[in-house]
Amino acid sequence: MKNVSVIGMGYIGLPTATLIANHGFKVFGMDKVERVVATINRGEIHIVEPGLAAYVKKAVTSGNLHADTKPHEADVFILAVPTPFKGDKEPDLSYVEAATREVAPYVKEGNLIVLESTSPVGTTEKVQNWLLEERADLVGKKLYFAHCPERVLPGKIVEELPHNDRIIGGVDKESTDKTIAFYGHFVTGALLATDARTAELSKLTENSFRDVNIAFANELSVICEKLGVDVWELIRLANRHPRVNILQPGPGVGGHCIAVDPWFIVDSAPKEARLIRVAREVNDSKPHIVLEKVYAAARKMDAPKIACLGLAFKPDIDDLRESPSLKIAEILADSNPGELLAVEPNIHELPAGLANKMGVKLVSLDEAMQQANIVLLLVDHKEFKQMDRKLLEGKTVIDTRGIFA
Ligand code: SAJ
Image 1 (cartoon, helix red, strand yellow):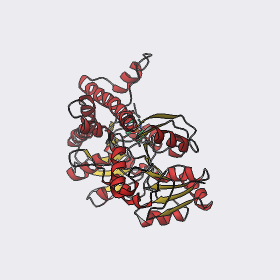
Image 2 (cartoon, rainbow, N blue to C red; image 1 turned 180 degrees about the vertical axis):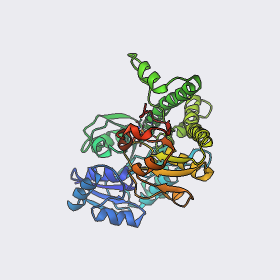
Image 3 (cartoon, rainbow, N blue to C red; image 1 turned 120 degrees about the vertical axis):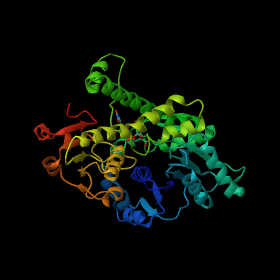
Image 4 (cartoon, rainbow, N blue to C red; image 1 turned 30 degrees about the vertical axis):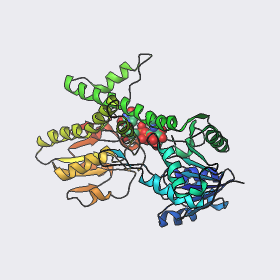
Protein backbone atom coordinates (compact mmCIF):
# COMPACT_ATOMS: atom_id res chain seq x y z
CA MET A 1 0.00 0.00 0.00
CA LYS A 2 1.22 3.49 -0.79
CA ASN A 3 2.01 6.10 1.82
CA VAL A 4 1.09 9.71 1.16
CA SER A 5 2.25 12.89 2.93
CA VAL A 6 0.03 15.96 2.57
CA ILE A 7 1.65 19.23 3.59
CA GLY A 8 -0.82 21.88 4.79
CA MET A 9 -4.06 20.88 6.54
CA GLY A 10 -6.24 23.78 5.38
CA TYR A 11 -9.34 24.04 3.20
CA ILE A 12 -7.72 21.89 0.46
CA GLY A 13 -5.07 19.79 2.23
CA LEU A 14 -7.38 18.35 4.88
CA PRO A 15 -10.23 17.26 2.56
CA THR A 16 -7.67 15.88 0.06
CA ALA A 17 -5.78 13.92 2.74
CA THR A 18 -9.11 12.58 4.00
CA LEU A 19 -10.31 11.53 0.54
CA ILE A 20 -7.06 9.65 -0.08
CA ALA A 21 -7.12 8.04 3.39
CA ASN A 22 -10.71 6.91 2.86
CA HIS A 23 -9.53 5.14 -0.31
CA GLY A 24 -7.22 2.85 1.65
CA PHE A 25 -3.94 4.81 1.57
CA LYS A 26 -1.94 5.54 4.71
CA VAL A 27 -1.88 9.34 4.87
CA PHE A 28 0.26 11.63 7.02
CA GLY A 29 -1.10 15.16 7.21
CA MET A 30 1.39 17.82 8.18
CA ASP A 31 0.60 21.24 9.59
CA LYS A 32 2.76 23.71 11.50
CA VAL A 33 -0.04 24.59 13.93
CA GLU A 34 -0.15 22.19 16.87
CA ARG A 35 -3.79 22.96 17.64
CA VAL A 36 -4.76 21.96 14.08
CA VAL A 37 -2.80 18.69 14.34
CA ALA A 38 -4.34 17.85 17.74
CA THR A 39 -7.86 18.63 16.48
CA ILE A 40 -7.46 16.34 13.45
CA ASN A 41 -5.99 13.51 15.53
CA ARG A 42 -9.10 13.69 17.76
CA GLY A 43 -11.13 13.10 14.58
CA GLU A 44 -12.40 16.67 14.57
CA ILE A 45 -11.98 19.64 12.19
CA HIS A 46 -10.86 23.25 12.61
CA ILE A 47 -12.63 24.67 9.53
CA VAL A 48 -16.29 24.93 8.56
CA GLU A 49 -17.15 22.85 5.51
CA PRO A 50 -20.39 20.86 5.08
CA GLY A 51 -19.91 17.09 5.39
CA LEU A 52 -16.18 17.29 6.19
CA ALA A 53 -16.40 16.50 9.93
CA ALA A 54 -17.86 13.00 9.46
CA TYR A 55 -15.47 12.30 6.59
CA VAL A 56 -12.41 13.22 8.70
CA LYS A 57 -13.71 11.22 11.67
CA LYS A 58 -14.00 8.14 9.47
CA ALA A 59 -10.43 8.53 8.12
CA VAL A 60 -8.90 9.08 11.58
CA THR A 61 -10.89 6.26 13.21
CA SER A 62 -9.82 3.82 10.48
CA GLY A 63 -6.18 4.63 11.35
CA ASN A 64 -5.45 5.76 7.78
CA LEU A 65 -5.14 9.48 8.56
CA HIS A 66 -2.70 10.80 11.12
CA ALA A 67 -1.57 14.41 11.50
CA ASP A 68 1.82 15.67 12.69
CA THR A 69 3.74 18.93 12.90
CA LYS A 70 6.65 17.31 11.03
CA PRO A 71 6.79 15.69 7.56
CA HIS A 72 6.92 11.94 7.16
CA GLU A 73 8.53 9.58 4.64
CA ALA A 74 6.07 8.62 1.90
CA ASP A 75 5.77 7.53 -1.75
CA VAL A 76 3.77 10.62 -2.71
CA PHE A 77 4.08 14.17 -1.31
CA ILE A 78 1.24 16.62 -1.92
CA LEU A 79 1.89 20.32 -1.25
CA ALA A 80 -1.31 22.16 -0.33
CA VAL A 81 0.01 25.31 1.33
CA PRO A 82 -1.22 28.89 0.81
CA THR A 83 0.03 31.10 -2.05
CA PRO A 84 -1.11 34.58 -1.02
CA PHE A 85 0.32 37.78 -2.46
CA LYS A 86 2.78 40.19 -0.95
CA GLY A 87 3.85 43.79 -1.59
CA ASP A 88 2.32 45.18 -4.77
CA LYS A 89 0.19 42.11 -5.60
CA GLU A 90 3.18 39.82 -6.23
CA PRO A 91 2.73 36.09 -5.58
CA ASP A 92 4.26 35.01 -2.29
CA LEU A 93 5.82 31.57 -2.85
CA SER A 94 7.52 31.45 0.55
CA TYR A 95 5.13 28.78 1.91
CA VAL A 96 5.68 26.55 -1.15
CA GLU A 97 9.44 26.98 -0.93
CA ALA A 98 9.51 26.31 2.84
CA ALA A 99 7.31 23.21 2.44
CA THR A 100 9.53 21.86 -0.37
CA ARG A 101 12.73 22.38 1.62
CA GLU A 102 11.10 20.85 4.69
CA VAL A 103 10.02 17.62 2.96
CA ALA A 104 13.33 17.30 1.05
CA PRO A 105 15.10 15.19 3.74
CA TYR A 106 12.22 12.66 3.61
CA VAL A 107 12.18 12.21 -0.20
CA LYS A 108 13.56 9.04 -1.81
CA GLU A 109 14.32 8.05 -5.41
CA GLY A 110 11.10 7.21 -7.30
CA ASN A 111 8.89 9.50 -5.17
CA LEU A 112 6.19 11.73 -6.67
CA ILE A 113 5.84 15.37 -5.54
CA VAL A 114 2.56 17.06 -6.49
CA LEU A 115 1.93 20.79 -6.11
CA GLU A 116 -1.79 21.46 -5.54
CA SER A 117 -1.47 25.08 -4.37
CA THR A 118 -2.64 27.66 -6.92
CA SER A 119 0.64 28.94 -8.35
CA PRO A 120 2.12 31.25 -10.98
CA VAL A 121 3.54 29.69 -14.13
CA GLY A 122 6.93 28.07 -13.49
CA THR A 123 6.37 27.19 -9.82
CA THR A 124 6.42 23.40 -10.28
CA GLU A 125 9.84 23.74 -11.94
CA LYS A 126 10.94 25.86 -8.96
CA VAL A 127 9.76 23.13 -6.57
CA GLN A 128 11.92 20.66 -8.49
CA ASN A 129 14.93 23.02 -8.28
CA TRP A 130 14.46 23.80 -4.56
CA LEU A 131 14.23 20.10 -3.77
CA LEU A 132 17.36 19.22 -5.72
CA GLU A 133 19.21 22.14 -4.09
CA GLU A 134 18.51 20.48 -0.74
CA ARG A 135 19.26 16.96 -2.03
CA ALA A 136 22.27 17.05 -4.36
CA ASP A 137 22.44 13.26 -3.85
CA LEU A 138 19.17 12.91 -5.83
CA VAL A 139 20.36 14.85 -8.91
CA GLY A 140 20.20 12.48 -11.91
CA LYS A 141 17.99 10.02 -9.98
CA LYS A 142 14.36 9.55 -11.02
CA LEU A 143 11.91 11.79 -9.19
CA TYR A 144 8.48 12.85 -10.44
CA PHE A 145 7.04 16.39 -10.17
CA ALA A 146 3.60 17.60 -11.27
CA HIS A 147 1.02 20.32 -10.76
CA CYS A 148 -2.57 19.26 -10.11
CA PRO A 149 -4.51 22.39 -9.14
CA GLU A 150 -7.51 22.04 -6.86
CA ARG A 151 -10.76 23.39 -8.34
CA VAL A 152 -13.34 22.76 -5.62
CA LEU A 153 -15.93 25.32 -4.59
CA PRO A 154 -15.82 26.28 -0.89
CA GLY A 155 -19.08 25.02 0.63
CA LYS A 156 -19.17 22.05 -1.76
CA ILE A 157 -15.66 20.65 -1.28
CA VAL A 158 -16.60 17.15 -0.08
CA GLU A 159 -19.07 16.76 -2.94
CA GLU A 160 -16.81 18.19 -5.67
CA LEU A 161 -13.39 16.79 -4.66
CA PRO A 162 -13.81 13.23 -5.99
CA HIS A 163 -16.00 14.19 -8.96
CA ASN A 164 -14.47 17.31 -10.56
CA ASP A 165 -12.28 16.81 -13.63
CA ARG A 166 -8.62 17.44 -12.79
CA ILE A 167 -5.86 18.99 -14.88
CA ILE A 168 -2.54 17.21 -14.38
CA GLY A 169 0.71 18.61 -15.74
CA GLY A 170 4.07 17.05 -15.02
CA VAL A 171 7.54 18.51 -15.57
CA ASP A 172 7.93 15.55 -18.00
CA LYS A 173 5.65 12.90 -19.50
CA GLU A 174 6.54 10.22 -16.91
CA SER A 175 5.59 12.63 -14.10
CA THR A 176 2.22 13.34 -15.76
CA ASP A 177 1.53 9.62 -16.25
CA LYS A 178 2.50 8.73 -12.69
CA THR A 179 0.32 11.50 -11.23
CA ILE A 180 -2.66 10.46 -13.36
CA ALA A 181 -2.26 6.85 -12.21
CA PHE A 182 -2.19 8.01 -8.57
CA TYR A 183 -5.22 10.40 -8.76
CA GLY A 184 -7.14 7.67 -10.60
CA HIS A 185 -7.37 5.78 -7.29
CA PHE A 186 -9.63 8.40 -5.69
CA VAL A 187 -10.94 10.80 -8.39
CA THR A 188 -13.80 9.68 -10.65
CA GLY A 189 -13.75 12.87 -12.78
CA ALA A 190 -11.65 12.96 -15.96
CA LEU A 191 -7.88 13.32 -15.46
CA LEU A 192 -6.66 15.65 -18.19
CA ALA A 193 -2.99 15.39 -19.12
CA THR A 194 -0.86 18.43 -19.98
CA ASP A 195 2.46 19.98 -18.96
CA ALA A 196 3.16 21.77 -15.66
CA ARG A 197 3.11 25.32 -17.07
CA THR A 198 -0.24 24.83 -18.84
CA ALA A 199 -1.72 23.28 -15.68
CA GLU A 200 -0.55 26.28 -13.64
CA LEU A 201 -2.01 28.79 -16.10
CA SER A 202 -5.28 26.80 -16.43
CA LYS A 203 -6.13 27.28 -12.78
CA LEU A 204 -5.33 31.00 -12.91
CA THR A 205 -7.33 31.30 -16.13
CA GLU A 206 -10.43 29.67 -14.64
CA ASN A 207 -10.57 32.12 -11.74
CA SER A 208 -9.68 35.09 -13.97
CA PHE A 209 -12.47 34.11 -16.37
CA ARG A 210 -14.94 34.29 -13.50
CA ASP A 211 -13.47 37.55 -12.20
CA VAL A 212 -13.70 39.24 -15.61
CA ASN A 213 -17.31 38.08 -15.98
CA ILE A 214 -18.28 39.33 -12.52
CA ALA A 215 -16.54 42.64 -13.34
CA PHE A 216 -18.76 42.95 -16.42
CA ALA A 217 -21.84 42.55 -14.19
CA ASN A 218 -20.45 44.98 -11.61
CA GLU A 219 -19.69 47.58 -14.27
CA LEU A 220 -23.21 47.19 -15.65
CA SER A 221 -24.63 47.85 -12.18
CA VAL A 222 -22.77 51.19 -12.03
CA ILE A 223 -23.87 52.13 -15.58
CA CYS A 224 -27.48 51.25 -14.72
CA GLU A 225 -27.36 53.36 -11.55
CA LYS A 226 -26.29 56.35 -13.65
CA LEU A 227 -28.94 55.76 -16.31
CA GLY A 228 -31.80 54.92 -13.93
CA VAL A 229 -32.20 51.33 -15.14
CA ASP A 230 -32.83 48.32 -12.86
CA VAL A 231 -29.71 46.18 -13.41
CA TRP A 232 -31.38 42.97 -12.18
CA GLU A 233 -34.20 43.27 -14.67
CA LEU A 234 -31.71 44.20 -17.41
CA ILE A 235 -29.59 41.07 -16.76
CA ARG A 236 -32.66 38.84 -16.49
CA LEU A 237 -33.84 40.05 -19.89
CA ALA A 238 -30.42 40.02 -21.62
CA ASN A 239 -29.83 36.47 -20.39
CA ARG A 240 -32.86 35.31 -22.40
CA HIS A 241 -30.62 35.64 -25.48
CA PRO A 242 -29.37 32.12 -26.34
CA ARG A 243 -25.69 33.13 -26.22
CA VAL A 244 -25.68 35.63 -23.33
CA ASN A 245 -25.10 34.59 -19.72
CA ILE A 246 -24.26 37.58 -17.52
CA LEU A 247 -23.30 36.90 -13.89
CA GLN A 248 -24.66 38.77 -10.88
CA PRO A 249 -23.36 42.11 -9.60
CA GLY A 250 -22.60 42.48 -5.91
CA PRO A 251 -20.66 44.57 -3.40
CA GLY A 252 -17.32 43.27 -4.77
CA VAL A 253 -15.52 39.96 -5.20
CA GLY A 254 -14.26 38.11 -2.15
CA GLY A 255 -12.64 34.88 -1.08
CA HIS A 256 -9.01 33.89 -1.25
CA CYS A 257 -9.06 32.69 -4.89
CA ILE A 258 -10.90 34.83 -7.42
CA ALA A 259 -9.79 38.10 -5.81
CA VAL A 260 -6.14 36.91 -5.74
CA ASP A 261 -5.32 34.58 -8.65
CA PRO A 262 -5.81 37.04 -11.54
CA TRP A 263 -2.99 39.15 -10.06
CA PHE A 264 -0.64 36.17 -10.60
CA ILE A 265 -1.27 36.48 -14.34
CA VAL A 266 -0.90 40.28 -14.23
CA ASP A 267 2.38 39.89 -12.33
CA SER A 268 3.78 37.46 -14.96
CA ALA A 269 2.58 39.43 -18.01
CA PRO A 270 1.93 43.02 -16.87
CA LYS A 271 1.82 44.60 -20.33
CA GLU A 272 -0.30 41.89 -21.92
CA ALA A 273 -2.85 41.23 -19.14
CA ARG A 274 -4.83 44.46 -19.61
CA LEU A 275 -8.41 43.22 -19.38
CA ILE A 276 -7.62 40.97 -16.41
CA ARG A 277 -6.08 43.89 -14.49
CA VAL A 278 -8.98 46.26 -15.21
CA ALA A 279 -11.50 43.59 -14.17
CA ARG A 280 -9.72 43.30 -10.81
CA GLU A 281 -9.81 47.07 -10.43
CA VAL A 282 -13.52 47.23 -11.32
CA ASN A 283 -14.34 44.55 -8.74
CA ASP A 284 -12.12 46.14 -6.08
CA SER A 285 -13.80 49.53 -6.61
CA LYS A 286 -17.28 48.16 -5.93
CA PRO A 287 -17.15 48.35 -2.08
CA HIS A 288 -16.38 52.10 -2.32
CA ILE A 289 -19.33 52.68 -4.63
CA VAL A 290 -21.60 50.91 -2.11
CA LEU A 291 -20.14 53.00 0.74
CA GLU A 292 -20.95 56.24 -1.10
CA LYS A 293 -24.59 55.16 -1.30
CA VAL A 294 -24.68 54.48 2.44
CA TYR A 295 -23.13 57.87 3.25
CA ALA A 296 -25.67 59.62 1.02
CA ALA A 297 -28.55 57.81 2.77
CA ALA A 298 -27.12 58.51 6.24
CA ARG A 299 -26.77 62.23 5.52
CA LYS A 300 -30.54 62.40 5.08
CA MET A 301 -31.25 60.99 8.59
CA ASP A 302 -31.06 62.66 12.00
CA ALA A 303 -29.97 59.45 13.75
CA PRO A 304 -28.85 56.89 11.15
CA LYS A 305 -28.97 53.25 12.27
CA ILE A 306 -27.53 50.98 9.59
CA ALA A 307 -28.36 47.27 9.48
CA CYS A 308 -25.53 45.56 7.64
CA LEU A 309 -26.96 42.23 6.43
CA GLY A 310 -24.13 39.72 5.90
CA LEU A 311 -20.36 39.80 6.43
CA ALA A 312 -19.26 36.54 4.71
CA PHE A 313 -17.72 36.59 1.21
CA LYS A 314 -20.62 34.65 -0.30
CA PRO A 315 -23.97 33.15 0.74
CA ASP A 316 -24.52 30.52 3.42
CA ILE A 317 -20.93 30.12 4.59
CA ASP A 318 -19.03 31.52 7.59
CA ASP A 319 -15.86 32.40 5.62
CA LEU A 320 -14.93 36.07 6.05
CA ARG A 321 -11.61 35.94 4.17
CA GLU A 322 -11.14 38.80 1.67
CA SER A 323 -14.85 39.57 2.12
CA PRO A 324 -15.98 42.82 0.50
CA SER A 325 -18.95 42.87 2.92
CA LEU A 326 -16.64 42.74 5.93
CA LYS A 327 -14.49 45.46 4.37
CA ILE A 328 -17.57 47.67 3.91
CA ALA A 329 -18.64 47.07 7.53
CA GLU A 330 -15.13 47.89 8.80
CA ILE A 331 -14.96 51.14 6.83
CA LEU A 332 -18.45 52.09 8.07
CA ALA A 333 -17.34 51.39 11.64
CA ASP A 334 -14.30 53.67 11.18
CA SER A 335 -16.05 56.46 9.29
CA ASN A 336 -19.05 56.24 11.64
CA PRO A 337 -21.93 57.66 9.56
CA GLY A 338 -24.29 56.17 12.17
CA GLU A 339 -24.86 53.24 14.52
CA LEU A 340 -23.94 49.91 12.90
CA LEU A 341 -25.98 46.75 13.50
CA ALA A 342 -24.15 43.80 11.92
CA VAL A 343 -26.19 40.69 11.13
CA GLU A 344 -24.30 37.52 10.17
CA PRO A 345 -26.27 34.32 10.93
CA ASN A 346 -23.21 32.12 10.31
CA ILE A 347 -20.96 33.52 13.06
CA HIS A 348 -21.33 33.88 16.83
CA GLU A 349 -18.98 36.76 17.48
CA LEU A 350 -17.66 39.70 15.51
CA PRO A 351 -14.24 39.24 13.87
CA ALA A 352 -11.29 41.07 15.44
CA GLY A 353 -11.40 43.93 12.89
CA LEU A 354 -14.93 44.89 13.99
CA ALA A 355 -15.20 43.63 17.56
CA ASN A 356 -13.39 46.52 19.24
CA LYS A 357 -14.98 49.32 17.29
CA MET A 358 -17.31 51.74 19.04
CA GLY A 359 -20.95 51.72 17.94
CA VAL A 360 -20.89 48.27 16.28
CA LYS A 361 -23.03 45.37 17.52
CA LEU A 362 -23.61 41.84 16.21
CA VAL A 363 -27.38 41.42 16.44
CA SER A 364 -30.12 39.10 15.23
CA LEU A 365 -32.03 39.89 12.04
CA ASP A 366 -35.15 40.66 14.10
CA GLU A 367 -33.35 43.13 16.32
CA ALA A 368 -31.71 44.85 13.36
CA MET A 369 -35.05 45.19 11.58
CA GLN A 370 -36.70 46.67 14.66
CA GLN A 371 -34.02 49.33 15.11
CA ALA A 372 -32.52 50.23 11.73
CA ASN A 373 -33.63 53.02 9.41
CA ILE A 374 -31.10 52.04 6.70
CA VAL A 375 -30.87 48.41 5.50
CA LEU A 376 -27.69 47.51 3.64
CA LEU A 377 -28.01 44.02 2.12
CA LEU A 378 -24.52 42.68 1.39
CA VAL A 379 -24.81 38.87 1.23
CA ASP A 380 -27.71 36.83 -0.17
CA HIS A 381 -27.86 34.41 2.79
CA LYS A 382 -30.98 32.24 2.87
CA GLU A 383 -32.20 33.97 6.08
CA PHE A 384 -32.35 37.30 4.25
CA LYS A 385 -33.96 35.88 1.12
CA GLN A 386 -36.74 34.35 3.26
CA MET A 387 -37.30 37.50 5.30
CA ASP A 388 -40.74 39.14 5.41
CA ARG A 389 -40.49 42.12 3.01
CA LYS A 390 -42.96 44.10 5.18
CA LEU A 391 -40.10 44.59 7.66
CA LEU A 392 -38.40 46.85 5.10
CA GLU A 393 -41.30 49.30 4.90
CA GLY A 394 -40.34 52.89 5.78
CA LYS A 395 -36.60 52.14 5.66
CA THR A 396 -34.00 53.17 3.11
CA VAL A 397 -32.91 49.92 1.43
CA ILE A 398 -29.55 49.49 -0.34
CA ASP A 399 -29.70 46.03 -1.88
CA THR A 400 -26.32 45.09 -3.42
CA ARG A 401 -27.48 41.59 -4.43
CA GLY A 402 -30.89 42.30 -5.88
CA ILE A 403 -32.77 39.91 -3.59
CA PHE A 404 -35.45 42.42 -2.54
CA ALA A 405 -36.18 43.48 -6.15
N1 SAJ B 1 -19.72 36.56 -7.12
C1 SAJ B 1 -20.46 37.63 -7.60
N2 SAJ B 1 -21.31 37.41 -8.64
C2 SAJ B 1 -21.46 36.17 -9.21
C3 SAJ B 1 -20.70 35.09 -8.71
C4 SAJ B 1 -19.84 35.31 -7.65
O1 SAJ B 1 -20.35 38.76 -7.11
O2 SAJ B 1 -22.27 36.06 -10.14
C5 SAJ B 1 -18.76 36.78 -5.99
C6 SAJ B 1 -19.14 36.02 -4.73
O3 SAJ B 1 -20.11 36.72 -3.99
C7 SAJ B 1 -17.82 35.92 -4.04
C8 SAJ B 1 -16.82 35.79 -5.20
O4 SAJ B 1 -17.51 36.25 -6.35
O5 SAJ B 1 -17.53 37.10 -3.30
C9 SAJ B 1 -16.29 34.40 -5.45
O6 SAJ B 1 -17.29 33.41 -5.27
P1 SAJ B 1 -17.46 32.12 -6.20
O7 SAJ B 1 -18.55 31.30 -5.60
O8 SAJ B 1 -17.61 32.52 -7.62
O9 SAJ B 1 -16.04 31.37 -6.13
P2 SAJ B 1 -15.07 30.86 -4.91
O10 SAJ B 1 -14.04 31.91 -4.68
O11 SAJ B 1 -15.83 30.38 -3.74
O12 SAJ B 1 -14.39 29.56 -5.61
C10 SAJ B 1 -13.66 29.73 -6.82
C11 SAJ B 1 -14.16 28.67 -7.84
N3 SAJ B 1 -13.65 29.00 -9.16
C12 SAJ B 1 -14.46 29.11 -10.23
O13 SAJ B 1 -15.66 29.00 -10.17
C13 SAJ B 1 -13.78 29.38 -11.55
C14 SAJ B 1 -13.69 27.28 -7.40
O14 SAJ B 1 -14.03 26.31 -8.39
C15 SAJ B 1 -12.18 27.28 -7.18
O15 SAJ B 1 -11.70 25.99 -6.76
C16 SAJ B 1 -11.88 28.27 -6.08
O16 SAJ B 1 -12.27 29.58 -6.55
C17 SAJ B 1 -10.40 28.22 -5.75
O17 SAJ B 1 -10.03 27.60 -4.73
O18 SAJ B 1 -9.59 28.72 -6.55
